[in-house]
Every structure is written in structure tokens, then in C-alpha cells.
Image (cartoon, rainbow, N blue to C red; front, side):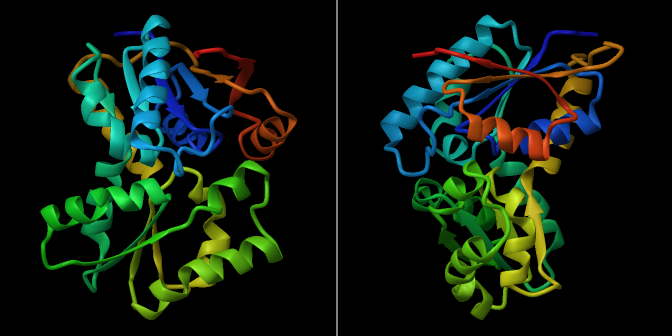
Length: 265
């Protein structure tokens, strides 16, 4: 048994979808979550900046004695995961591989769409990993740079998100995909808006659930499962704003134990 916390980080509020999924599957685990709200979004930053930010937060989580670290940001997973794995002594997981494996397993038409930030899409990581799983699958990718700011500002439903979603997804709709990977942990909060822009039969792949299952397997394999009576989510943000607090209270209020400011610079 190991009662040390699980460290999770993202550029903002989106990674809480992963923390929430882990909390549901592993309710005894304590989570130390960092939202880098001072530098959100990561999707329009350079690889050098994303790597720098990821190293800073990972080092802080290591100092908090975290037993596992999860990069709950697709952009950071695509650009920093491999480097960080070489630099830390604890297991570190990303959110891309679990989502890819799930999508490949459920597509019937071998036509998968991927939504992501510019940095994630430009990295070509989803295309490569899907093709590694099954080279016969057709992959259609689309960068959606306005989705993260919408979520961070609490615009989840309504005319504005719908218009933006329709604009981004019209090409994927014409491609007749049957499975869509939400390649950013902010995007599951736009589930309904995204579904309405496509068709009812579309299968949306939210990597948070798949990542939580992979984490459970790892904790059991390495004998790292906690025996706490009840876990909790302690949230830290690099810029404490009213908007962030409003979004957290709207979607995650029953699971967050505390929200505190953090300076990792």
C-alpha cells in the first residue's frame, strides 16, 4: 500500500476531467492537481516553452512526494512526455496512448477524427500512434484553438460555442468519421456542443476514462494502491482567478477539497 498522492497537471481547468475520472475509479487516492492558469493555453506555445513549463510543474509535484505523475494535457503529453520520463524516478503517464487505443478498438468504419490544439495537431503524434495500432485506419485531424479559451471562460453551451464548433467540425462531418478523439482534456466539457455539430451516432473518445483505467492497472501492478479511507483532490493554480473558480464550482464542486495559489516559476 502507498498513500502518497497522485500528481496531475494541465494548462488549466481541463485536466480536472482526468482528476475527476480517477477520483471516481479510485476513490481512495489523494490527488495533487496543478492548473497552470497563468500560462494557459499551452496549444499556441512553442515546444521549448511547453517543455520548460512541464519540467517546472513536474519538479514541484516530485517535491510533494507524488508516487505517480499524469500529464493531463494532450499538448504537453505530445511534446514533453518522453523527455520527462528520462528525468523523473516515479512513473509518469500521458493521456494520448489510452485515448488512441480506445478509439482504435471501437471504430467500425476505420475512420477516426482527432480534435486538438495547434501544437498537438502539428506534432502529428495522433496520426502516427493510430497508424501504429492499425495502418488501415483513415485519420482526419483538426486544430481547434478557440475551444480551450471557451472552456476556461465558462462558455460551454450556447450560440457562440455552437457556431465555433460547427465551423471547426464541418470538414470532419463531410469525412464521415464514426469515432472522434477529443485530443485535449478541456474538450469533454464541450461534449454536447461537439456532438450537436456532427451526428448522433458519433462515438466521442474522452481520454480521461481510459487514462484512469491505465493508472489503476499501474498502481495495482506496482503495489502503489492507497488504503486511505477516502481520497481528496487538492487543487493548485498558478493564477487564481474568479473565472477558474466559477468553472470548477460549476463542474467539479463536489470533488475538489481545496484550491490554492501556487508559484512554480
